Length: 93
Image (cartoon, rainbow, N blue to C red):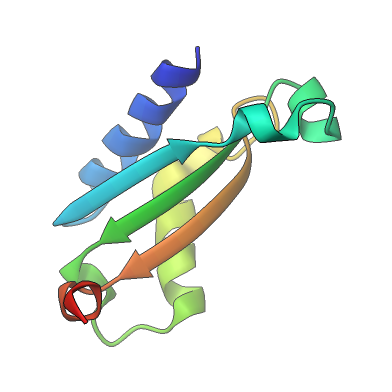
């Protein structure tokens, strides 16, 4: 199930944004026993590089990622999502 969720995150981000780099890490195993984990939701880290983030602040970038996730941001699919959203220039530096 975990790999399926990682693939879901990747698919949704690639469908919504111009992606030049993407890494999705499943940290769910670090949160066993946590309330969200008991409900079935996973904990994930995303590092995404996109020119779509140009001229946007951190909050706007995170909103773009959450919008791409849509209904997957329910406790039974994704309980927690840590986001590092960078422009291509920021990823190089």
